[in-house]
Every structure is written in structure tokens, then in C-alpha cells.
Length: 374
Image 1 (tube, rainbow, N blue to C red):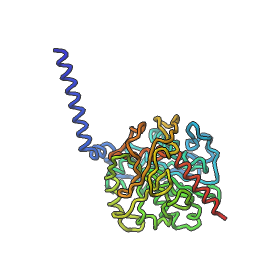
Image 2: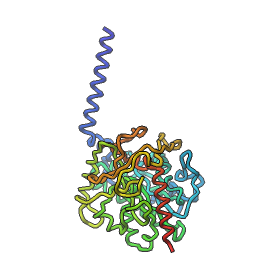
Image 3: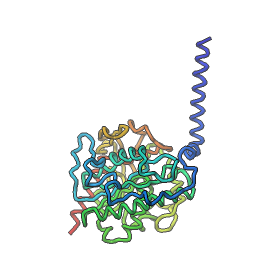
Image 4: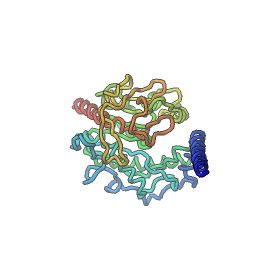
């Protein structure tokens, strides 16, 4: 009898697990919105609490820091020695609470995640120059799960911090230094606005851009690049161009990105629907062709905080898919199972999957840029 009751309990647990799985599959978007979208209306944070980018407290990484997560390198990689470039890196979303539409600068959990992403992403560029990464009052992750006007207000507010940080970066970086722009996810969204608002409008500034790495956010070849006045990178050693990709394992289902993309307007004021999404293969540095796993110079195999992450070459293939515009990475890779998004979306690992390739790509483009300067 006791054994039978035990089996009933196990059967009930299995049914509950199955029911939870079915509910998650059917109502995932609704559940995510309930968990992460703020219910209170947007209220702009007080300007008295704005980050001061003339002070070190306004930055996660900058050259004067004694301890800087952006200077981290994995075992087997030479320590960062800097280079002639100045790198402006806009971090991704790390604030996931629904208490506010924009992150408080003193949120300890968001700041801990911020260090992790700067360590694992911005560090790919520390071989070519010094890195500036601003703290900013980023929009919460829930702003990407709703079309409410408050979400746009939160993103607009976050961009104002990023724009002020970029102005401060231009004042603090060495005069005339080559510039690399980089970001991920929300950071790349803000980077597209910097390209349209500030870089495109200033020929002297635009001439200093080695490359802009707009990773993890869609860019339209026809509706965005003309407004940026920079082309997509078409060759591995090309400079003064834009790199972008979004990583998906196969079978890939990028329907969420496609819906967002098709419903949006490009920076030239025209719809993005029907235009090509920019995809530059991070291994080859070109928008076409397939690179086998053996060509991957090193993927960053994560631990939780990336402080003990290791590099492993020859693991991840890459292919820009002309039909969808996303980067296909083959079957779901081992060791990257956490935080995979709907549709086999490896968004969280856009940098980690190709850390050494990004490092090599930036070095090649910088070498071309420096060689072409008078």
C-alpha cells in the first residue's frame, strides 16, 4: 500500500511537471510579461541621480581604474597591454526587476551582472586599446517584452545617459585616436542611435571609426546603414564599417526578432520589412560563406561569473543565413545550455561563442585602419 501511494505521488509530480511544461510552451510570452514588465507607469528618474561621466563612479571600465573587469583575459591569452584604439563599449541589459522602468545605479544585483558582461564581452577588445564602458540607467528587461509607450520612454531615457557618456568619452580619450564602438543587446540598440545621431553627423568623427560592433541587435542594410553613413563590413580586414550578428542554434526559429524587425522603422524613415538584416560572420569577417567549427579561434566556455572561464578552439561553426539574416551556429553547443532563449536563440552568448574571433577581427581592422592613415 505504501509503495502504491509512493507511485501515486510520483505520477502526480510527473503530471504537474508536464502541465508546467505545456503551460510554459503555450503561454511563455504572457508569463514573461507578467514576471518582468513593470505595472507602475513610467516616471523619469531624478536628474539629481544622473551618472557623472567626469567622475570615475560613472564608469564600469575606463583606463584609470586599478581593477577593471574589461582588462580580464582567459587563461592562455596574454594580459591586455592596450593599443592605439579607444574603445567605447555599451553594456547590455542587466536589470531584470520590475520595480522601476529604469535601473537605479546602486542596484547591487544589476551591477554584479554588469561586471560579468563587461568581463566576458568588452574584454575581447582589450588587445587593441583602452576601454570605456559607462554605467547608465538602462531600461529594465521588461521594456523589451511589451509595446507599451512606457517601454519606449524608458529606452529613450537610457539613451540620454549613453549619449552623455559618449560625449564624455570623446573628451577623455586621446585626441585623434582610432575609435572602436561596441555593444550588445540593449547596448547595441543605443549604439545604433549614436551612429545615426552623432557619428553620421560628424565627418571628422566618422573618419576615426575603425569599426562598430552592433552585436545582438538587428540592423537593416537598406534602411539603417545609409543613415549611419558607414557600410556593413564585407571583408575581414576592412575598416570604417559595421559588424553585426545574432546567434541561433539549429533548428532556428527567429520569429520574435523577425516580428520586431518587420514592425519597425529604419533610421532612414522607411520600414525595415522586406529589407536585409546585416549579418557578418565573426569567424570569417565576411557576410557570406560557412566557417566550420575547426576555424573558430576560441569560444569562451562560461562559468557563472566568467572569472574562471576558459577558451576552447574548434567548437562552434558559423554561417550567415540569407533567408533570415541571423547567424547559424549548428546544433546546440555543449556547455551553453543556460539562458538559451525561445527559438534556439543564443543571444546571451553572442560574444562568448566567438570571443577569440572578435579579438582577431578587431586587430585586423585596426591594422588596416592605421596603415591607411596619413
